[in-house]
Image (cartoon, helix red, strand yellow):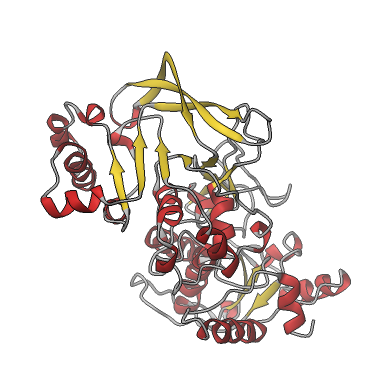
Length: 451
């Protein structure tokens, strides 16, 4: 993110130079000299990390010229294509790729990543050909984080509860025909290591028409260990304990007894193989290694006991982690960690280049985490600008990008173009009471714009 970015991110789809609202930022402001009046700054990516960084730069240095580039024809990244349409107030999904499920059978039909599934029901153009087969009775999600719970909730939520969200029309149609009645969420470790939050868990427990399945054996002796854990983890585990161990009251017992769908957590299980159906044309189950925990605290890890078990299912969704992709050979990248090596956002050995978001710190945290992280990257850039540490000399900035795109026959989509698409989506949604009906085909978007 710097004026030099133009030379290696020319593939980006379009720039924005529209001023951003100031919002709340840390109380930090530099006094800049007249030589620094109009720094040209390029931000690549219009998700929260990009926008929050640009916001901080413009608030602290009003003379700065910031261009935001995005490869999609529409903006906002995970805010648009994020976790769940029934949670418009919070999104927590923002990396370019998923961690591959590297086990035999992962290539079978009926196996896909949770990231692709999320992109499918949220209208991400690259995932619209997914066409998941929901004709089976049981689905298995490999992972126990917020994304895994979001996917389970979408699979089990009565479709009429999704009608007024911005879920795509095509996805809603498939979910109406779904036969999935049971969803298992599988984790290698135990209840103290789940990665989802208490809000997501509470909503899942109370999901209409469903009942939770938790094995009390998994929670034996856990109460005595709660005094050792931080308060947020303690509250989350206490909710799990109550759900697993306590007899529900009459009203809750009646609700669970009438439920036609169920979801459950399977702990201490590590996937070893996706089992094929007899004809080899789909998934029939997942072979799991039973594990136990070794170590303490953050060093706790799952090790196999030697026992195996098979969990029948017809759909397997992998939610075992996310990672960023390398952009270009000229940009350092740590393939093992999935991040750009950096110090406080400064890309190592590349003066003038900065990073923010998950490509900076790895796939952790939610929107609020990204906001703070992005403000800090913006602050670092401004400190370097004031100290004269950025590369000097004239640079062509956005004019060079415009020339490059023109030479490649790329017609950028502008912010005013996006406003037209936005208005079209809102108009299409009004007829059915939805906030919008998302456009999912880039070709249709460009036709509407006359490109």
